[in-house]
Length: 185
Image 1 (tube, rainbow, N blue to C red):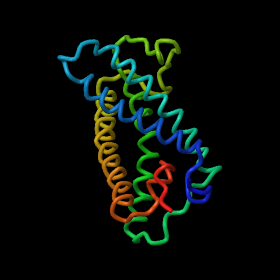
Image 2: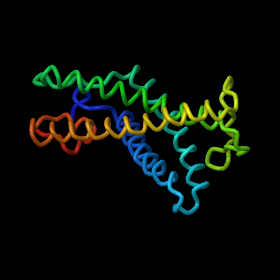
Image 3: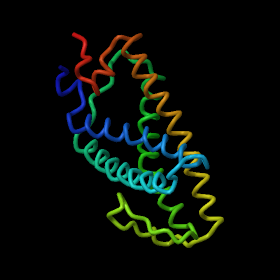
């Protein structure tokens, strides 16, 4: 197992994998709910909103945790472009993990549809203050939300590709920082 300085903490690892799985589900639900042939689309929209807000809350918690518990240093042998790409990817993920739920929330706040929004069918979700119901405003937030979804897919592919490159080609312990069982001696 990796030492504390070489691996993320268990809390950071739990945040990472919980948010990653939620985002994968959100992308899938986001795609499914836009298709007319999909049964129970309304329920999918409601679950998408609920899990999106959960990603927002977990991402804020993860960001606070990261400030209090800095991540382990990247390997010394990494090329400069790899270090820059890793930093840009991580910053991009944080921007999107926080921004995407806020854009979705703003979109439903701008909607003229008289739909009660409840998280997990239990907790009322109020509209964001300062956003008036408007088809044009809703359309702008929807476009930004869709662009964000495409960006998060690109970042996901880059992130997973980078982790696999480090594990199988560079043969370092970058991937083992999030999956300690993969630690190499």
